[in-house]
Length: 139
Image 1: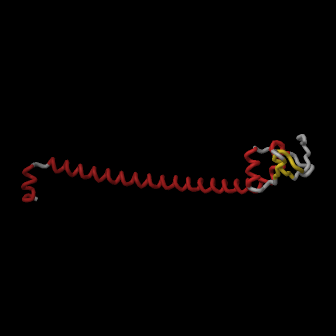
Image 2: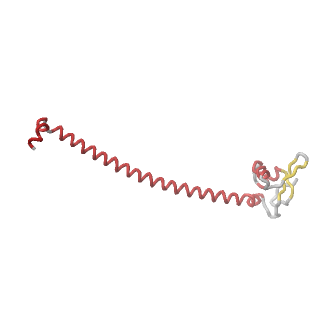
């Protein structure tokens, strides 16, 4: 039909030309056709796509109006997700640090208790049998 130049006119274009003009894949074009974003018609075996192209439009700028709002929303959503996950990661790091501190305190407390009990056992072993048996009489 028409050759690819920097200035296109509105009209019916083949699928191949439309993909080249809009700089999109065939799959993306058919997705847009299925979602009724682009009008098409069939002439015989050929599918033609209607493109409304202002005379100053180039192939890369035509894609922007169709996808800009979707892309902007997607980027905003991804930025919100990124912020959420960064905040969650920071909170989890703080929780892990606090939990580690509590764990260390419990281990230290248990170690001190075990050490005291071992000292008590050692002292009771060092005192003689007679002192244990008759210690209550002398004390």
